[in-house]
Image (cartoon, rainbow, N blue to C red; front, side):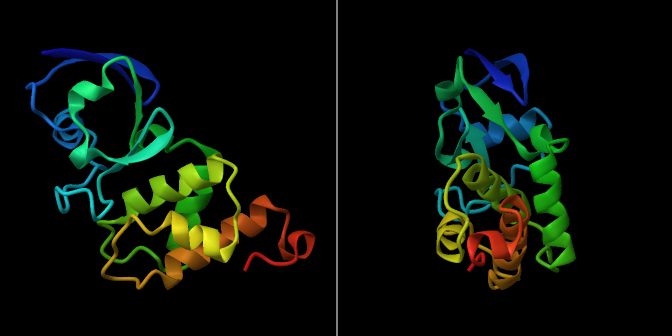
Length: 162
């Protein structure tokens, strides 16, 4: 079956198996930031944006994306917010094995872009769908809080980011 979607800002038509999940289709299309983890929607390694909302692509039927917009990390590489999030993850030592990093970046990006609160509590909630065995979440959270402070004009303007 054929699906047409907008993938990372460009219209694509792709032949898929009727039962294929979005994860396998995206990887088949060269979107290797989308990682295969649990295949049950629990780990977040396969997180992408579907019409701007983060979803676990391993549990989304690829056919569901027909006439929709899908964005992977590859599609956000030039975005200033994504660049800042990536740099802070590196600077804070939050990228260890790196397997979960694309999903964490997509989840944080979506949280920031949605205009959600950028407090310690809300950023922790944004990361709840992403499992990371290496960092213990302290360093990714520190990176997100630094970006939040930068977005809000620093800690003095909002009374701190925590």
